Length: 136
Image (cartoon, rainbow, N blue to C red; front, top):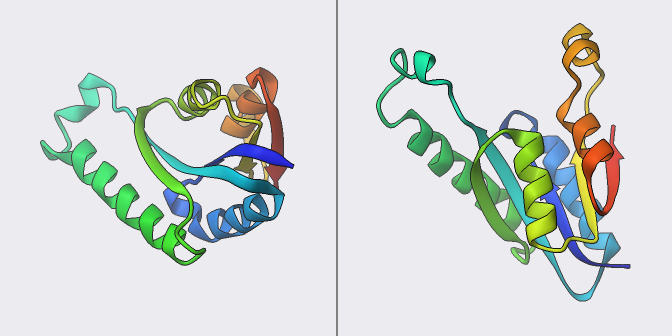
């Protein structure tokens, strides 16, 4: 059905990542590609003074390790990509850059902050140039 699927995974929700990665595999065309990704959120400069010097680098390395393990558990056929930035913006950017046919994104029950600010999944759904499947 789809030639290129982007699967963003939040490190705090790896079990949801497993579920959506398995779903992506069922929707992928023969010869297609899954890009398993994580976005390490950039930290405002006024906060970085309170964090270890290599906090971002450690976060990237940890995300790469966890995504590689998740990928290996599902046959290791996905490409792993970890980027730094704003989650919604980076997911949308990767979708366009990779000419994705589908983004499968996990969601959670919205809290008050989501109603005021909007969630990552909401932003991706509203602004994506390809189809988006939201897994609750």
